[in-house]
Length: 220
Image (cartoon, rainbow, N blue to C red; front, side, top):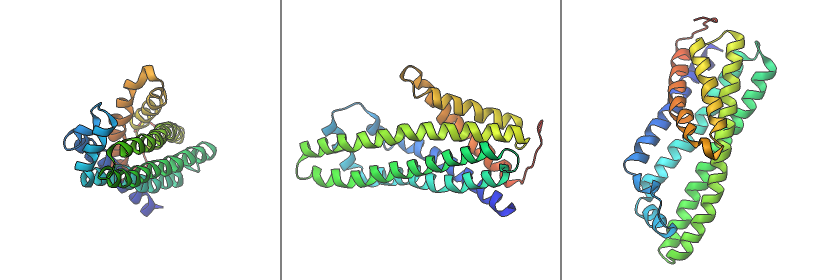
């Protein structure tokens, strides 16, 4: 189990790193992607930045999802004895989350190649296809937030009950999970920043604790 915990710690840090790299790329080289423009202009931007967009999506979705599976299984192994029903439920949501994240990345990248190829022949049709792909991607993104929030909330709650991990870390996980669930309400979308940025802190902190082999009791 010790090796699995170390693997889980490394996975948590890599998962956090994908978020950081993703945010940096999105706010710099891919800043134009966030602009509110017509679909045909969006497709033109994707065609001009296909390689970096593909790498960004592969990293922040596919790579992140793969390492999330490892982390979810490591936490399940560590917490299953203390609160089996809750941990089983949390792990189910965690694995679903990983699957949805990977699926979102694959849909985007496969769709990206299709749209860029089509753009050279018929820009208007490429824009129409992009809207269809974006609808599927957005749907997966919504599920991503819900499943991720439920997993973070339940796994942190289970760790609190088991007396494992520092209390502050578990409370942070509970706050992040609740914020993510509330963020699906349009009027509370601002809470997505709590889920996203708070999640980076939570994953890094969790990874460090797991790598140190911490078995802290409540109050650590």
